Amino acid sequence: MPFFRKRRTRDNGRVTANDDTDLAARRAAQFEAMGGHEMFDRLTHRFYQGVREDEVLAPMYEDDFAGGEDRLRMFLEQYWGGPFTYSELRGHPRLRMRHAKFRITPDARDRWLQHMRVAVDEAGLAPEIEQALWDYLVRAADAMINTLEPRP
Image (cartoon, rainbow, N blue to C red; front, side):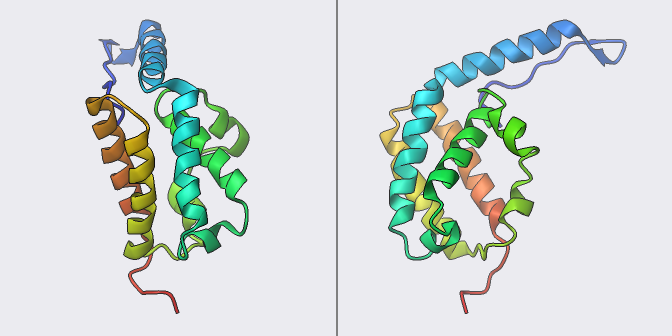
């Protein structure tokens, strides 16, 4: 979960309009605190530099590294309070469904996290932001595992 928790006040069980405004402002502040578009662009670019050279992960992209980089950047930006471009272009993220066609083993997850760790380390984030981002990335990577069997 993003490092700013959602706080809602209720009026007879309904979220008030002020809450939506407050939430939008807090999401925008969170996105900017993380470094905004520029940080997510650097993060995903550095991540894909490693993925392109990875013997397990690279074949999953079928030579669409630029598309994968854009999709990951847009998704992360949206998740962490930035624009909703990902959903506007692709609909609901449905991460498990979108990754179902790939054999994601614990080894693939570990490799994904290894490349992402390098990118996160180089992002220059404040420690509490880096930890929140890393915790999310680990949970997301764990959730993508869809087989325990090694490649045939």
